[in-house]
Image (cartoon, rainbow, N blue to C red):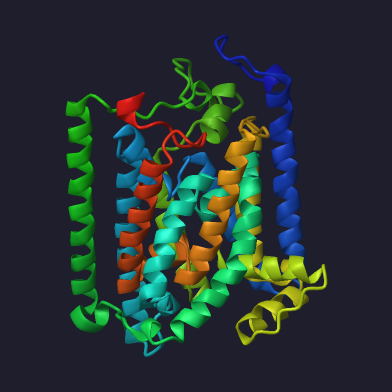
Length: 429
């Protein structure tokens, strides 16, 4: 069915040839991914599960324009905290889900899922979070954001991804060396339910989120009084179509509602929290992104005759030799890219973005490297160390959050106006 010829398009909507064709490409790509997933199920059903899960994650991230790095950047740049608030709500829902899942497992006498995300909080986590915070601002997104932006056609993300992957390799070595040093032994590993029970852990954690929410609201009010507050503005094609006509299934208004109209940050946050619970139940572990990047780096450099003999690389070498497409974590990341691409294609919005200068490219490279190095040093990114850490009641998640925020806000301050994705300081505009 040709959308432009067979359905009623409001006269105010201009449908280009690209927008007519892209939904078909998106549908074909979706079918191809599903068929590929079905094929991989003959090898291992886990591969199919991870691929489809990634597909859903990528679609949600893009459809709601949701980003973890944006939760820090948006409020700093515009003074508007809707994304920051959505992140806090997402954390809260995830905590409640995790508490229920983990308590049920405990009552059944089995190990609670998600405990692999409870990390030892030490200098590696803190330093890694700080470096990652700087990197995500220079690169324009964190790990999940870089993957979803890549699927949307952002040239910036293609550049940052290369050094993100390569930076993961020395980052892993640095983590191994630091964690085995005297200073790396200083710290603690704390699973909050061990000291305050599941109910207490939820109440304590949600209380911390409540404090952060008050900080967000207070800063919003400060920016409004200061006169430097910008409301979130959707692009024209993302807005709902004013439609007073009776509902028609085969109409452009219905198509727009289902595939084009932007989801709110809050919708994205709630859906990601649900996905958090689904991943926890279906895999026994929480969502992580950057671990497979080491595998990708190993696989790439091995093609040039570089061998990784250090014990810390042993598992990654084995995974790389087994094939990237046979690695569940890699397939989930690929699924995120494809899910984002499908979201933009179905909406007729896919385009390669090359609006940057050589100077910007250098910053993207640096940002990607800092993210790769920092994520491995900390043992995770905004997903693995922050979301999965806090969501599973690990003290390390909160430690990562603090230094991540410090690094992110420092980068926004220092590099304001120096790279195209960080605007000048509001007082200098």
